[in-house]
Length: 182
Image (cartoon, rainbow, N blue to C red; front, top):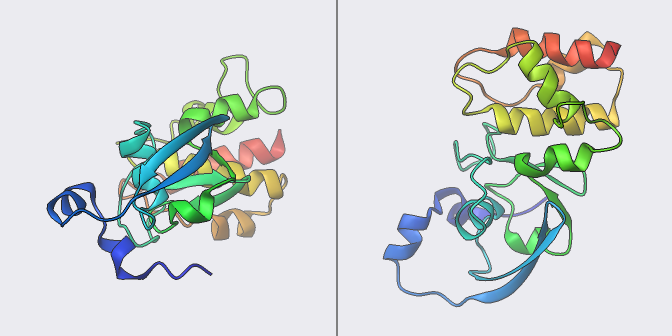
């Protein structure tokens, strides 16, 4: 279990910029198959490194305390809440964001459209409404189905831990069920 403390829960780029300069260090992250060397604060959450340093804005900030799941990415194939994961914990690991999900699925679980199977199911079942939380939900479901390709309805319900204020849960369940039955 990572002890991320209050710093990570309240870290935002604006607040960090207003504070006195902090020590930085070099970190190497492999995101979507590409290595990036960054000069960043050691405690910076992975979310802000991905969004602000690498410019990949598909991963969203929602709560900052790992409750909502909008910030979900894969680290070595496992769903991780990047808002509370320090960069140091992800260094040297395989990180996949929503931008790299289709590429990561290519050859094994991709569709003719070039999307991952989960992304295509989301479209087919019209899951997104506003769409803000969907990248995190897609990442969480992709990881879940990779480890449990034929879940029961109870397992599907238990796996949906991301928050969607629009209430797209019934359609998400239908999409997951369709993937499990495919």
